[in-house]
Length: 221
Ligand SMILES: Nc1ncnc2c1ncn2[C@@H]1O[C@H](COP(=O)(O)OP(=O)(O)OP(=O)(O)O)[C@@H](O)[C@H]1O
Image (cartoon, rainbow, N blue to C red):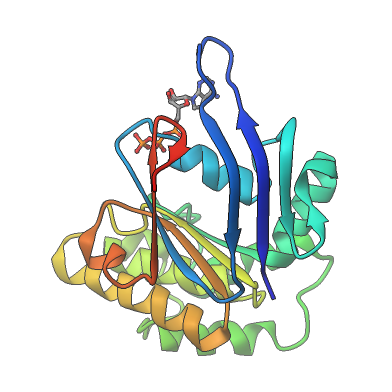
């Protein structure tokens, strides 16, 4: 579903002497589970933004199964991301005032005129799968671990071939972090999605089949 071929990638930002990212070649197999680690400022978030089409690339190729994100304009990248990528962020990005199930459904509500058939049933199933019992509970009354589990359910609703998480357990304590780490890896495996996780968390990195280390914008090893 989601083979990646990355070539000659170079990302520069104004004010930085060296490229923020410089990766001659990288390949991921469909269904692979990959951790992205490295010291602060090494380029993890930039690489995630490149792989999900959030950051426009001017130099190189970012080819997901024949779709080179470098050739797409912003609108086309947004549509590609909505169809192919489930995102989980460190600080959840949930909407306060909406319930758990409304948060799971929100991206589909915004992307389409009306909810696709079966979306509500799938949202209920996913919330149960991630261990959320009160589907109508307003998210701002939930624990941080519960909030992240709602965000994991939301990321999976459109059945993405690629799941990308940026420090998904960084703001969670012991058991909550372990639960989210187990869910992300277990669910990605269940649906056959490629999983890419930027993380320092050994609870999570230890679960992933492959570890990519960035240092100064370059991959080590
Ligand atoms: N929009 C931008 N403009 C200028 N410099 C940027 C921009 N975004 C990132 N950078 C710089 O690029 C480098 C890589 O940043 P990035 O956020 O990808 O690192 P990171 O590995 O995710 O760090 P952290 O672990 O602290 O989140 C840093 O030197 C950062 O200051």
